[in-house]
Length: 398
Image (cartoon, rainbow, N blue to C red; front, side):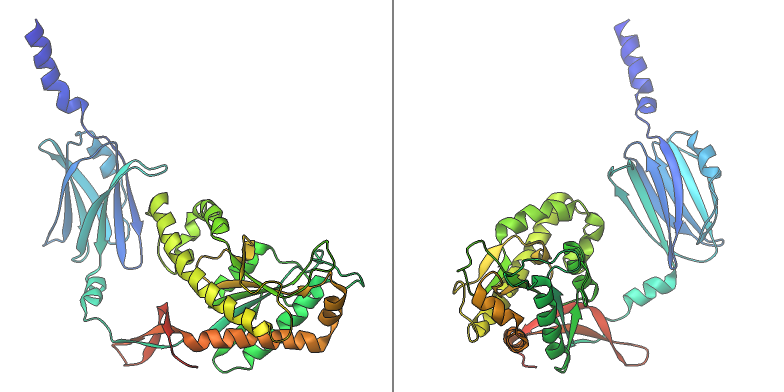
């Protein structure tokens, strides 16, 4: 009796372990069509093409015969005119009727989010593959116009700190920011982007988004310092603290749909959280080095017009400094809560000096680290067009 039971198990095992074809989906793009088989388990598969007429054949091993009915209900799309199938051996054969010859590429994907296991077959037009197989275009690096995001702190219903005589931080910050932007815009190959240019409030993260939208090479946030002790005085420059940056990772990773922007074009959609964190760490480390460099230059320059609160750069977890792909500094121009410095901050001439010294530090930084962009030689007409990568080159003057 036992051998009968054992034989029954052996005979029915292949049926019980067969992979279910749960769905067949076609996605049409401008140059290719993607065919996706949603499966309950791994399957063996073979993909090949046949001519006269043109067909793409996909053999799925271990898929039960009843899957044929659902496959035959699938409508053609894009490069696929028609979908048909039949039973073959211990699986099924799916035939895609196509108008012209195509190149194919197939791969399997593990379960992810709402999807289970998938077999993906991409069909590409021959011209798309031909273009990809052409010799690499000629490229060279060229100077990239420098974009500096100038952020005036606070604004609107948020006045920031207030001096004893009623001077508001938001007004000083905007005035200095505008003066700094004017100096940047008056310099060849430099452009300033103001995160706000009026008395209105912009959210902290939106300020960073504005900088990223304009592909800024540097982010400078202008503020006035304040403290309960009115004898506190001096200028300070802040960069992001590592502790603050570490806490920010979870927030960046919670929005992975925006992660390709964060590492300068690195797509994180198919990366796990651990790898994404490493990539952001690498980007943040390079950005921190640049932030320390430009911050030190600004601090040294500003020591010429006002005493420094401390002689070294400060670090804190300011939200506006947390872009991992843009060197960022926050300048505390002077203490608005200090009587003497409040009078200075209210002075247009001192505001002009502040803007001039901040600009001097910025100019010195870009004198040593001039951003470059990759230019690609257009094979058709020989023109150079801007590529999508930015580079920093050391020791190149403006």
